[in-house]
Amino acid sequence: MYNEQIEALISAALADGVLTEKEKQILFKKAESMGIDLDEFEMVLDARLVELKKKETREAEQHELEMEKAKAAQKSAPKSNKYGDVRKCPACGAMVESFQTKCPECGYEFTNIEANSTTKKLLKALEEVDEQVSSNEGMVGSVLRGAASVFGADSLTARKVQIIRTFPIPNTKEDLLEMLSLSNANSTAPANPSPSDNKIASAWQEKTKQLILKARIMLKNDPDLEYILAEIAREKKKRIIKISLAIGIPLLIGVIMFIILAICLF
Image (cartoon, rainbow, N blue to C red; front, top):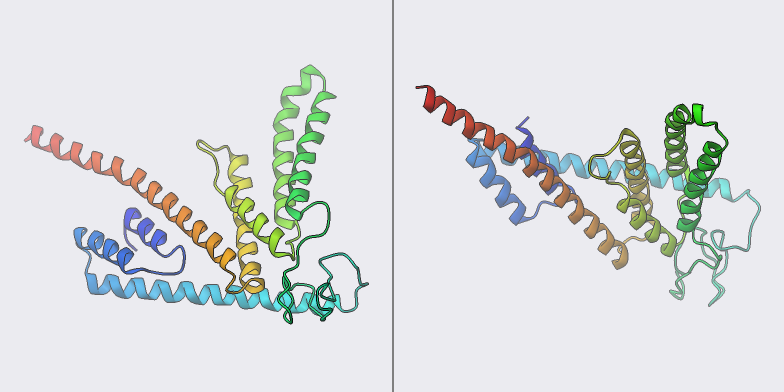
């Protein structure tokens, strides 16, 4: 609807689902400098914020429905004494649901009692892909090694993307927040990214969304989760603003050069 620069600023302001007064002032100032009608601009901002809230609500409801289906299916599954299928609180003995992170009766917070966290298992699975590809390349002759490396890179990327997308989301607060931090940290492709880098970063972005949806259901009003989500929103805004400025500065230079050239010609 608007040019790329102001659209990027709008996306940055609405990234956390909240439009602060300061963000609103910045957007209005920018819109005014570009000759945009402020009443119309305010209406567009309000509409986008409402649509964003509706989208978040729909996603949360859909995920909650999936959780309910999973719980119903779990009732007929064999029971386990390991954490992740906890049925009794170790502190007071109260019955608890498998997805709860603390006892509703005494407030005892559950922790992962297994030797390896879910996040470590995910990283191990990704490392094993690298190790297997390296081993296979070592068996290829020198003549075919170049071609094998090209096809091997595509296979490596596809397998990593599959692992990231399908890896189970943990049921403990400790593991859930740890995996969320890891996923968000890997969701941005490096500078001058290759097609493989972009595909892997995209898979991490999808995983981050899944983790946030589950965390908002499991850890509602949890201060640790709110802190991490605020940090993610701040980082996202910084990245979008940085990209916006990178696009805007060359454009501004081009306009100035055009004006100078026009003056010289006339």
